[in-house]
Length: 270
Ligand SMILES: C[S@@+](CC[C@H](N)C(=O)[O-])C[C@H]1O[C@@H](n2cnc3c(N)ncnc32)[C@H](O)[C@@H]1O
Image (cartoon, rainbow, N blue to C red):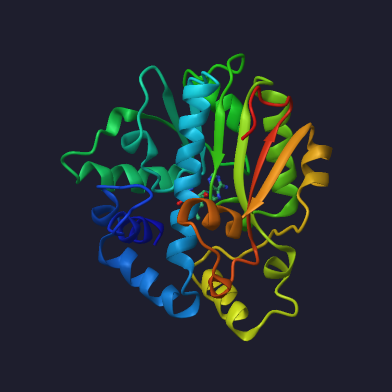
């Protein structure tokens, strides 16, 4: 589904990014899921495009301005950043559940031009294994800074799992590292007092097999208790204003946010 939206956003008249592989990866099944979601939450394409574009820019900032040489994609799914925005001397690590990663690698294997070696693939079942231990076993350095992109994952975890992973990242990464993740508001996660349209969206996501479990309206206290000492969060209206140049109330970006977290303030403002 995400690939289907990336494929569509790549064809915008002024695209925020171009993903040459997304359409083939998504296939008819991906587009069919996206088409059903369109009817329930029309701003989905814009939301995902903004999310992808913003996190791409973060990769550029971290590698170009902070000299970060390791990018970790946690819960990578069908992420293509390693192939789309490679940087000289920068290693991309894709960490995912063994089943998802095997399915992805099989699909990539069908695409002749995809540079499969752009990423180092790290299998990890977050419920049983430690992501940093698994990364280090694959050549990651925990004494060098990293950018960790945790995209499209946090809403589907329990709060305990979010806390456990965030605590491990804060304590186990080099302190110059930056963690970026998207999250949704508390109301969407709890399902209480939602409009009928929002309830439909929430139900559909659950029907796809990944129910929304965690949400927060104020992520700073959680991140502070996990060990982070520098936190920024932004919402998607801010991103739309910056990247698309306008505010449209009907986009209904009430529940989506991105957080940046570090244990030490980065040398320049994000
Ligand atoms: C909704 S997908 C997001 C994929 C991608 N980051 C994106 O934004 O398109 C959630 C990802 O979390 C991973 N995941 C869920 N539970 C996991 C677990 N217990 N261990 C490892 N990965 C898990 C899935 O394999 C999947 O790749």
